[in-house]
Length: 189
Image 1 (cartoon, helix red, strand yellow):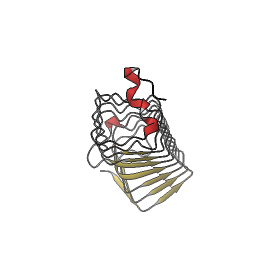
Image 2 (cartoon, helix red, strand yellow; image 1 turned 45 degrees about the vertical axis):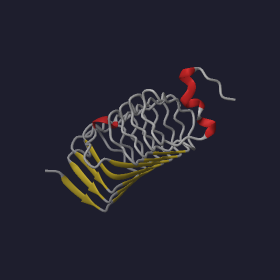
Image 3 (cartoon, one colour; image 1 turned 90 degrees about the vertical axis):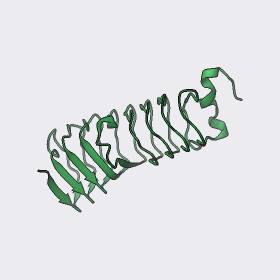
Image 4 (cartoon, one colour; image 1 turned 60 degrees about the vertical axis):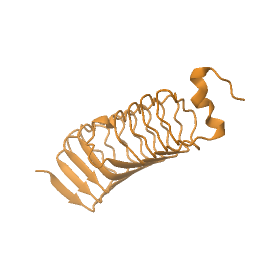
């Protein structure tokens, strides 16, 4: 049975490989914590906030994120695709998510604000109503994704093929339109 922790603040902790396994955290705040060496098993975060934390290279295959906010976190090369998909709700503010994977996840309505999202795998992901607010999407992959009503208008460096990505009612800024036309070798000046 999982250990349960409610409404606790954790500061300046470097967690080891199995230290958080089989634990459930609710309404907890983690600040300046390092999870990069963790290989999570049966871990649940409910209504938690992570501030200035490091998750880069962490193995989060068996983690439940239920209404979780990441602020100024480094989350490079993390595979979210194997997370618990039941009530998967996350928000990212000022985070570095480079080389991470959201493959096949349903992240409808998720908000990414001021994030570096370089070479992230969104293939076959449900991005319906996702907001990419001032994000760098250089080399991120959107093939077979559903991005209906997604908001890209303040983001940049994206290349999305409208033939392989559903974009009904998605919003783009005029200066970013070249990211939709790259495959057709059309020059926009």
